[in-house]
Amino acid sequence: MKAVIEVSDLYKLYRVGESVVRALDGLDFKIYEGEFCAIVGTSGSGKSTLLNMLAGLEKPTKGEVIIAGSHIEKLSEDQLVTFRRDNVGFIFQSFHLMGTMNAMENVALPLTFRRISKAKRLKKAEEMLDLVNLRKHKNHMPNQMSGGQQQRVGVARALVVDPKIIFADEPTGNLDSHTSQEVMELMQKVVREQKKTLVMVTHDDHLASYADRIFHIIDGKIVKIDDNRDAEKEKIAADTKNQGEGKEDLEHE
Ligand SMILES: Nc1ncnc2c1ncn2[C@@H]1O[C@H](COP(=O)(O)OP(=O)(O)OP(=O)(O)O)[C@@H](O)[C@H]1O
Ligand SMILES: [Mg+2]
Image 1 (tube, protein in one colour):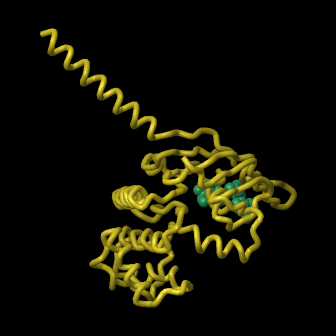
Image 2 (spheres, protein in one colour):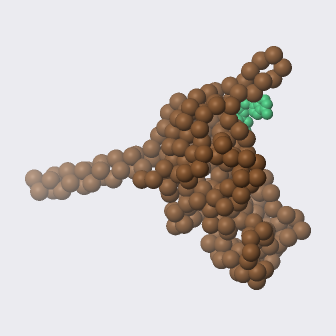
Image 3 (cartoon, rainbow, N blue to C red):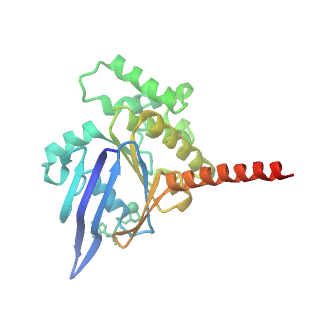
């Protein structure tokens, strides 16, 4: 497996008056191509700080963040803008859609500063809306869509530039639990089909359970990493074993 994100010895300290907040307190981990990882922790544990560091939105106090082979802690602001444009998609808690643009125009927006004709941009946006089952709503304005539909537009917009990595900070934070599950299932499906790496921050254990791996963060430290794929494998193994044993019982009768 190829690592797309490599973090080593990462620290972020904030000075607030006389005191120092250790928002990230020595992190080391890797995230591999095609993985869906959730970062889970309570409020103030350092989730958003970590995501900002991975996306190159803030500089670490110390340590390395290597994304797709680039040391992003060493890039200049201009280089970071280009880096993000070419490699990264974002999904926000509050959707961040443009109220004066319809769904298709919103999805096409990240393509604006690329040398692609408007017709092609809209066509690509339409394909992405198809992927999130919103083709019929392509001409709807954000205020003519439900929260879940708006976030599906947000997912389509994150995918339109075909980024290697997608970052999502509490992507279902403004949705009810049923709609949250629908959006999570959609993200899980799209990430698998499109072979993207998704890093999602949440404080909700249930939503985190949709991920392949769950990173638990407490006071700026990763205290545990759960692999859901191991649990899945164990379940399949147990089911197979039970079936096998069931068969033996029948044979003895
Ligand atoms: N710009 C800043 N200046 C000072 N302290 C900060 C700053 N940004 C974050 N912090 C502190 O760093 C710690 C981690 O904050 P962070 O925003 O990463 O938490 P979080 O896990 O995302 O929380 P939430 O679930 O509430 O969004 C907190 O103690 C916070 O007060
Ligand atoms: Mg946060």
